[in-house]
Length: 333
Image (tube, rainbow, N blue to C red; front, side, top):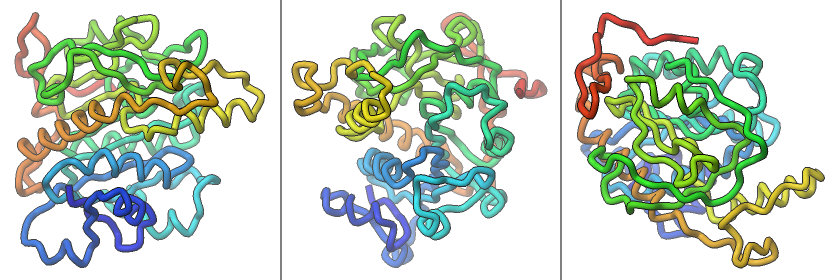
């Protein structure tokens, strides 16, 4: 996919060295097409690493995609150079009147905190509210998925006995959803989190649809959850992770004296001195390509015609769906 980014974004040069087609602003302007407009709300501390991970997995879609990087204004990042943030990132107030085909909300290392104690929680709620009317489909990752489920549907997170870290096996539950097309019956995904979600609340909510889950419920629970219109997607793992991301996290935690468990199903022979095994790249590519394909096929060509999310919302009726009462409003936290 020709990803359209700013000319001098550092990730552009790394992606080009990997033979990934990245289109700069000058070349994009010469093409008479409407690209998909994808906004990435990057809540991770190492923003440049996350940029690279996400742009890499978006690179397999054949349609030109214009990327906007967003940050929160109410938190000052201490792990990314301020000049990088000022040059390449925008805040909501700069784009609040614009419309987007897709929004990605990343994870964040704040999962042990109650949502209301997170410094930028009020701003994140404002962004998620904005997404309902200005974005066709929002893709929530890990803590971003927990935050989205809590804000939109009142689903609470739960502390786990210990950190889940490693590559976990999942199974497809509902293959007919577009985002599941081409997926193997069983697939692997990186997980790195201390918290889970209230599984009973998810599965009893008629507006939510679990399409993939961990083979062992004790290990991961629901992996991919859709609002039944597929315009809100919640992913509890990190399929966008690079081969060495879990390795970096493990060694960082070791250096902090946290005595972490070795990430499961990750290192050759479960030996941290040996090479990690990359076992999820095809799954990741399939997931993100399916999402972009859904967005491309369903978003109005003129984004001004975009309807709010609840107009396309459905509820489960047994194994079928029926239109949601659009006079109702989402429950907000």
